[in-house]
Length: 267
Length: 260
Image (tube, rainbow over all chains, first blue to last red; front, side):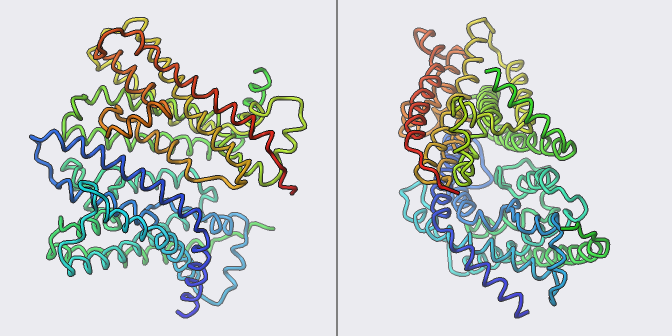
């Protein structure tokens, strides 16, 4: 466990170095958030249609999405791991006296956290101060906030477990880009990154509910604004834990299988 | 021009060497805007219209801007990778060759996988045209073509500007994404739905509205008064490209090799 923690720490410090890139990212995400909110504002301004989620809830949904983007996008590409696999340097990793699944898990986790930590604070701070109607409203009460933090953290673990599956698939395909792009696009749609899940038609929502993707992004954000009431949030946390256990189980199993058959490409 | 096609052919051959990866990437590129379009569809299914614009009208807007974006990504991708060229000193080699720098940089990279994106927006375009209750006339068709072409010019111009910045900063700047990806995201909808200051900025500084909102009014017969002005508004995209090229020339003169 100690080894994993130190890998995690190293990566975290490493990621925190890129402050200029983070600043640029923040500007981009702000602009992006504004555009999305303005579009929804235009949609909502017509009135007469009963929306399943209020505009202010939607706005906090969008801001949180922008602030925690690094935690919730599936497509957080780590070329280093790809290269390890495709160049054969994976052999070194295999020599290390710690489980490779845990090691990579810690690496990916730290990378996402570092990037999110740099970005989320400024975005949230400014979004809280924006004039109405663009302001990000604070959660209704402290308990909701705690629930939100818990679900977000669990969601992050689910996301990393999912992306681990993508990395493991590279052992088989050796070419990362194509198949993973397809996977990432589908996953992001199902996680409510393109349009928020409450705005999807009913049939699609019932499909989305069966998949793990929404538990990483959509679910915590709706807990934050109180769109998902507290008692339902507890059930959701249970489902999150179940998914997490299942995904890690599958990942470890697949990793074991892939490693047994791994052919180290010379070099 | 002949030289540029040679570049294109060579790059096409080299990309076709990895056939499976190529097709998968193309499919992926097809799916990216497709998921956005699906989102658009679901939103309109719920809300029916946005500030008086129907789904088909917005779909037309969406198709035009995505086509322009994918075309410019296809052709001007070299500028997107330009920072790498400066960092590793590749640009020195470009400078000693007896051809224009713009041409060479443009020819250095060509993303054929963007064809997937292009096909997707083409399908949307055809669908939108067939569904719109608009009488199509020759001037309208020309306007549509102009919209796509000048959208491509605008995106290319932005790519060039971004690359020019590399002469000073060496590293590429992510901020530019605001105007490329952000511009694309924004121009999917008619610009009129946004707040005044956004619309103004993207009319007079970066003329996105000249390729989407203004000519669209003409095509949909919503334009007040003389249609000719609306029809010709896409030409602003060409006008936008000129200062970009000028800035590029200034940048080239300013260039100092990183020496590696």
